[in-house]
Image 1 (cartoon, rainbow, N blue to C red):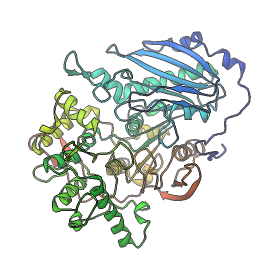
Image 2: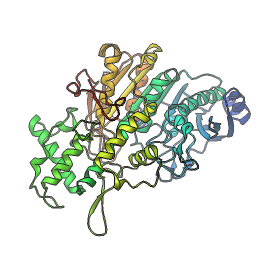
Image 3: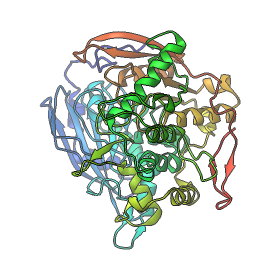
Length: 548
């Protein structure tokens, strides 16, 4: 087939402008869709409608995205389906089928602890949506996993009537609803166009990256190609580790101002440049930077001089969560990565100034929910009562109690044997999800699947130097949605395995590409070779951190 290449800022496939087949328009009806879903358990058609206006009024979403008007849409048939899960929850699946179709299906994902991110303005987000899917000619689907109308953004997993976790909603979130969405989305597409998809893809970032790994591991036959970006897959370790920076600042009674965090970040970048002889080296290298924060003691900032207590906070945050005996529970924030709000509201080191002038940490909401509702079934729990000892106990409890949430099993033999492909990418400067976790996972995949040459046949990993979490850092380089989709599709459809990926730096207008760099696929070297497995004496069955 013809090699796929970028055609515009957010386009990688040309969509014909010819009028759609009248039969396609004719089949966009509730009767046709209902017949196609007759064999799908507990599914019912809510609505079927054609949108040929070129735009859509998008309301504000439950996860905080503002309302806007989606523009430049091709004509499409929107189908809304409700499905009852085994627990009686109503799951909403939304399918968009372009009237002029390229023969491909794209499963979309969510973010955080939701399986749908909805629609959002702009094209900075590294996650496929229904809108950018149909603009490229794909039929696409999304699912809310039964929690789309729950106003509790982080605590939907708790059944308030019983005070217990809702196992059905959790299973929906882990994998079931994404698989059901895929079955329904393909059936609807086939019914409307009278042909099955030639190729199917799944793409997600952050929490959606976790969904992508779950698809590759648990439902490998659903998609020909899967792209997981910045995945939150090591859930029982990653999520409690995200509370560590706030806990450190609380327990040491020293919540750093953004100016001090920035001083440490800039020192890491400058030191790295000095050691490598290149001022741009920090944004082009995936080498884990090493820096002693105590070197900054005495340096002036607009928030006051750096003191030893500040350096202690920074060192503990970089080192990551540890037990009372010093054993590492999970990774810490990569030195040099920004996580205190300069790039937006997302970050693990955000602090706020109280009316009396003191600064206090403002913890990551999903991490708070893990400790409050998942581990203690108490949404009113006050995190300020948490101590280092209790943190360690709850961290280990979560690993043991929620092992069934895990999707990071490195056995991808079914994916390989089915001829499917997995593309994994992660920005080194991810300010929310530690990129070392993806590196650790892929090291395990390489080892389990017979070495790098064998793994290269079906899975590739790119550690993207200088890139951030799900969005390209404005001043840096990053991969965007088109770059990853082009690489994955050429691999699946043309047999062109991605040995490298382009990272882009855009000009101030956000449209023009100012510079392009190339990054190579991840090699065999691992930063974890020297580490060992630690087992807690209090929880002997819980492997805290599986290491070589």
